[in-house]
Image (cartoon, rainbow, N blue to C red; front, side, top):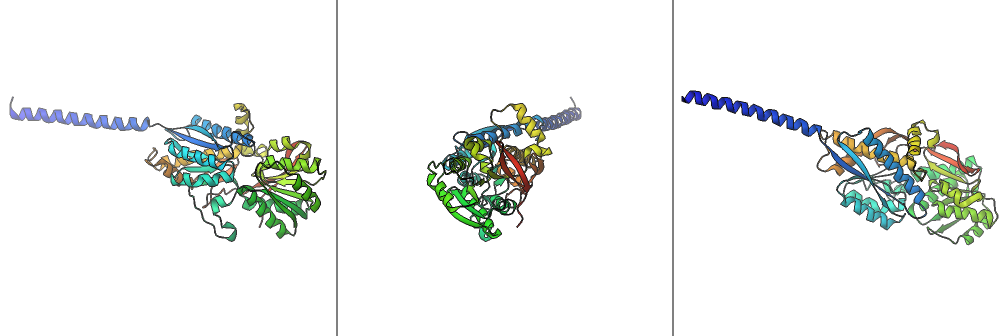
Length: 410
């Protein structure tokens, strides 16, 4: 074969081969993009055992509901979400262990929880070192986002991976005090608080504002979580003759206190607490003694929010054995916020999760904004919810009944 003819044939063969390779490469790239699939996990930390289990299970169920919806609608193309639930029993040490467990599971992209502010204090550092996003539907202690010296005006965000969808006791305590003084006309209050960050913080902000309004704190007492012997305190309360008892803490102890006051000490002094007593379990435990007691709680009741209709109906259809409780809707929005954080991280990386997905999600969280079950959801520069709405409830005929919705006016 002549050299020129042989050379031309080789050139032609090479050109065809090159073209074929280019086509195969392009098809491979298209198929890779079209078939991109990744499964990630949103972990839940909450008390699933112990006296706070009803609240914890409501949180876990609501996160599962959000994940189902994200997968059903393919909210993040190429991403499938699943959940794993970790029981902290309301104990800080177990919460910290759960944080370490979540960090060690490479598929965990974010975490919803915990219920207790005191548990969160033990989880934040571990999760933040791993850039693992934590969004709480229930923590209200201001220290978690503003630092320990926030009351003196020195606000420091120590953990950029921590966010929450509820307002804080920097608003809730004063809101409760204003309602007690102006709305109920109460002038003398006896303050009882447990030794946990939530209870102490809520009682402190309430007391400060109540005094600023012109009221008098007739007495103060501290108890330990799980305290059973409250007889001496109820006697002290009766002797100080207040027209209201304010309780900073959780519903198991508060319901016991109310019951003892009404049935043993035989006073008709109403009890007021924060969002941690706003649960049907409080009424169940206190019985008829709960009638006329008050609670402030985060946000607006879901049964009167048009934005919550889908959540309420979906929860019923799912037939969970435990109701969503005070924090269910916020847990749904917390999970959805993480979904949106993942969506932002994927959008910023050409449709895929980047090599360091946890850091990318944490960075994207700061810009997350959407219309949630509880209303507009977004975060300020400290990771706090921009929604500061609160509601006062009273127990009437065995049910928590909303009285007033608003926000703290300084």
